[in-house]
Image (cartoon, rainbow, N blue to C red; front, side, top):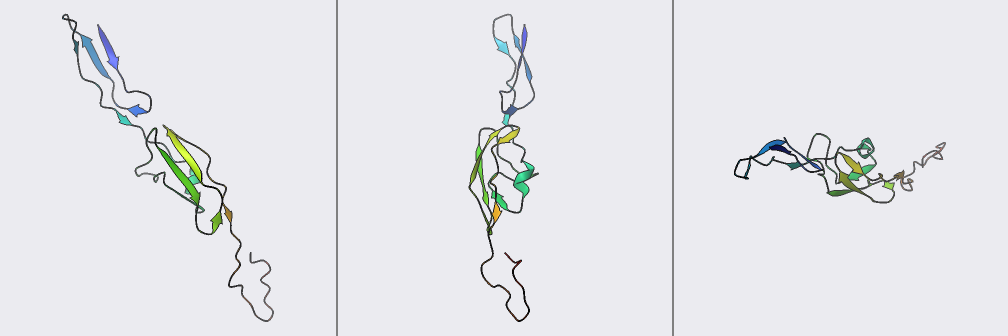
Length: 117
């Protein structure tokens, strides 16, 4: 008899065939399993958001791990938490709103800075 040993949910690796010998001993090797990484949602690439979830093409958050996202300087909004349920990063990015400019308005004769907010 043979069976196939596979990686558990959230892990990836090549399945390995295991055989039950005539002496009742299992013969074969366990697969080498590594945690799957989560894909980054497009919304986290916004210039208004900074996050701890990794970078596209670089080390990303692995299955079962968490990360967070917040609004960058000049924006305001709540911090958002994410959880990697490979291959998807679960959570909603923060709704970042630009903060109004309140300093250094251009002043001078004939200057209308009313559209500068």
